[in-house]
Structures are given as structure tokens and as C-alpha cells.
Length: 195
Image (cartoon, rainbow, N blue to C red; front, side, top):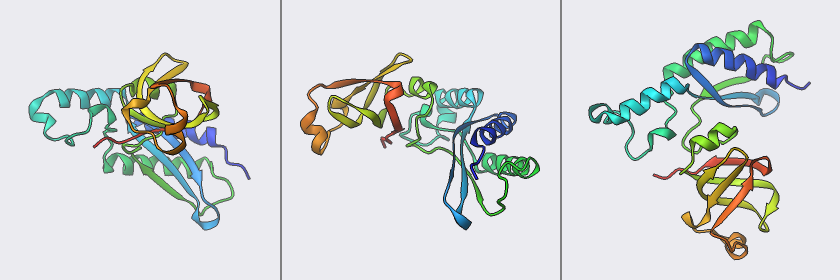
């Protein structure tokens, strides 16, 4: 039986909004008794703005993790995850959004420093960061890229490949220092932590 993931996502987004949070990603994985519904959260724009204000204040900035750009922080606490999980779990049960199954685990966490990039707004927000991605169709005879995201115009992204040493086949086949990729051609992508 296929799960109504879009309905589950819409419900998760409603609950997240009521908590001042945003859904970064949602996935249902595993089989049998080992199924897990994973929700990755971050603070909404207002919560992220407060983090930026905190980073600008020298006294408050000491409370933030050292060496990590504030834009990469999700701002999520254990209490945020627990509160969301309790309310969302109740909604899952009341609305019977995972029909025919009572054996699954609800996992709620931050997206982490190497978060997935799934929406156009992610690409805009993380210009300047290191990104690793895979394309559906080859670009310059390659499908795997790691580089610094230097530009995103809403439909095309530009990676500076000189920002990181390419390995193996990629090193031999790439001639340009930058590559431009159409957003619809991106199969999967995530940030690369720089600590």
C-alpha cells in the first residue's frame, strides 16, 4: 500500500508552522517492523532571523557553535523536536495517515550540517557554500560534482569546481573551472560541511 506522502507532508507542515518551524525533508524508509518516518526540521525565517541577530551581538554570539556560519544552523533544540513529535504523532494517529500499520518509528531531527538541498529557496540561501550533487543527465561528461555554489538565478546553478580537488574520473574529464547546471537536471544534492 502506497503512503500518501503529500498528505503527510501537508499535515507535518501545518504542525511545524504552529511551532515556528519548517519542514526541510520528509522520508519513509525501511520495511516490516523497521519502518521509519523521518522528519527534518529547522526554525522558520523568523527564528533564523533571531539566530542572525544573536550572531551579530558579540555577547550572544559566544553561545553559538564556533566555526559554523550562522546560515547553516537550523536553530532546532531537543525540546522543539520533542514538542513537534508529540503533536505530529497525535495527528498521524487521529487522521490515520499511515493506514494499516502501527509498527513504525517517528524520527524528528535537524537536517544537520550536510543537509539536503531540495527547494529552489535552498539554492538561493546557500550560495557561497560547498555543495555535492548528482545530475540525471551528464554535464561535460560527468554526473557527479563537488564545488562552491557561486550563483543561482532561479533555474541554473553555477559551481566553482576549483574550490575543491576533484578525484578520479572527474579530475580527468573536467576542463572548466566552473560548471552551470539546470536545476531540473539535479537528481540529488547536499551541503558539504566545512569545519
